[in-house]
Image 1 (cartoon, rainbow, N blue to C red):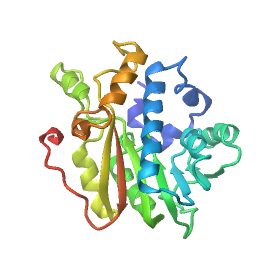
Image 2: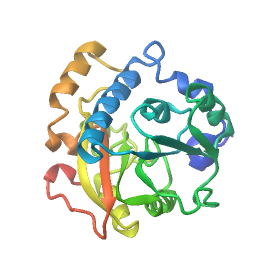
Image 3: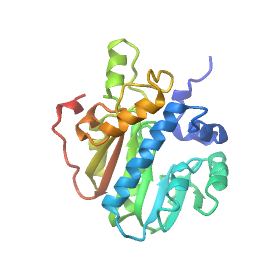
Length: 259
């Protein structure tokens, strides 16, 4: 019997991917995932204007993969650096973001960044996939490289308490493996010396890549309208977390964040 893919440590699963992963964000290959990425871009632009206005921005993208985030932010920051453990991912990234600084390495094992600090650090589609000890190790490593007035933006694209996840669990089809809750995020931040500044619900409708149920254009229009409703962060499928250096994370009392 073969080993389940989920049983393989996330870092090892990640290493062998490359061009085929990059293609999954194409509207032709995966319309829903492409839509969510457009919504994330929109949110990133707003967060840059709000938290890093009129500044020369040094940017680090952790687990940069095939360079999707790096490519998007290249013209919005002064300098961008991507770090990833996968040579096959970075091979694609060098094609889509040829002017970016791209480094192969594992910050939890050998910190190739030395004493460098960054105004903006991003980490997308990493934390829910990673095992809890790896999440903490990575967040602590990223915190060490965050400038005193900088912000760390990461996403939870597999919110365990999203409306869709709750419905699936009620139907006996849900799984907590490879997901992350708001409480998980809250538990990670203090040990890394970070505090929560803001949360942005990006994809709140109970749709999926395989069952969009609505025309993508219609779904995107609705998501844009409700994207400012922070109360939906408790049930959104994809949430952006904005963090800054600090000793404690702000706690949320909203019942939507219950386990």
